[in-house]
Length: 375
Image 1 (spheres, rainbow, N blue to C red):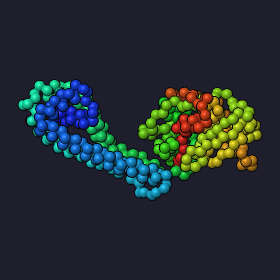
Image 2: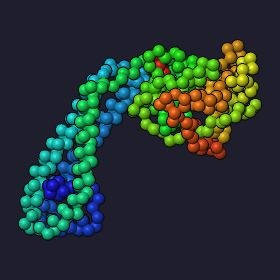
Image 3: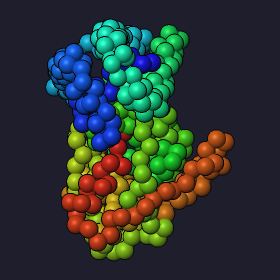
Image 4: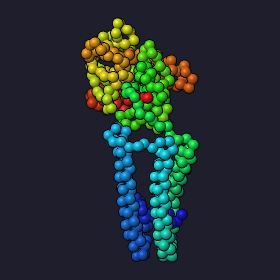
């Protein structure tokens, strides 16, 4: 423990993290012991070499992340790892890093053993006081290191029996948006879900993909609710938009965000009719443009109220699009609550779009709009 404590003191001195009192004690040690002072100088050199190694490792990590992103977006091709191979690859990379750290720790221990030997006879009281002050901090760090080690061991053990699910290439693209950030429920169109025979995938605006499953499908209203089942999905804050319980007003200005292509696309327009095709009251009519991938896109007014969901477009008239009215979302949520294990679903929001400019509204909303893919 003393070896580790003293090397921690030297490193904190180099980083300027010592308190004034600790720094005074440590500098007194160096002043009274030229050999110790020289050893600290050597440690500074050693610490700089560690920083170079860290920079190199981070560069390689960023390079791997860039290659992975370019591969996912189709700019480059790369044979994907399958099943256990992915976990084994990640684990082998971790083991290499741990081996380097262990080697460094061994060298440092030898180095510090000599330091203690030099200082124990000349300044025992000062060294003891410094060690006592650092003991509590180091114990906490040791606990954190052990927790990380346990997690790595758990991951390695799990990979031997539970390989990750492989996400297969998708055959279609549409849009959906979050309505419950606590339980990870997303709304899209029923006709979108029908196209997925094997897998449903949701992809965020950063290109990250997650597995999902349909828990509610209503062909009459063309509404579907998905639950993200992938544990890698990170919980988001409550949505910045609210979902209106009343129908849209004629002439109300709206904007949309969706995925008619592989990146999120903005569109705007207005409510041109209160009802849909042949006076269908489930839908309203919009004057805007939309493409196939816009199915499931949220329709939002200037105050940040979600008024509907894009469902289809009129093929015989340009600029005519139909949207499912927002009150139908509440009806769908009530139906899902009747299903076992999904009773906790609820629409959670923290409206924050009213009164801000359109660019700021888009930046907030796009985090909650997802590309829906499947095969």
